[in-house]
Length: 166
Image (cartoon, rainbow, N blue to C red; front, top):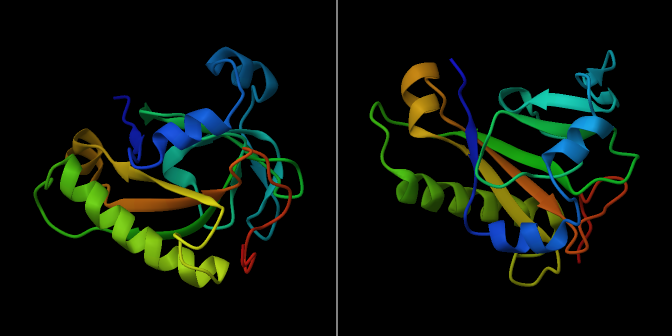
């Protein structure tokens, strides 16, 4: 079974405009193997990362639109497009629909953005988006995790954006 997670629609257009990659084959050739973590759990070596294993503090070379099963992860000290800054669990037994999931995801990610950056999303120049469960992952894997992502409008950051206040 091949299950996926979905990038939030709210910022997808901004994400696509910010990234200058030419396609998945480029990412696959740059990051052909699995990402490796050090003893502290941080990404120590670039590589593909199962989207279900993204943790707060992970940095991603990009955030592919639509449904994805893997992302290219890099050490945060290297240039990257997004950083996972918050995650949380949705509740409920039945999948509430993509629109409801998006609304709940954005509301919580926006609140967490303010705490993480030090400014509200509307005051900031930074971008935010999120990965959410699909109906398939909700039903087959009991997936309820939303992962909030932050990045520069330019699509390239080095280091963390924690307390960036911009």
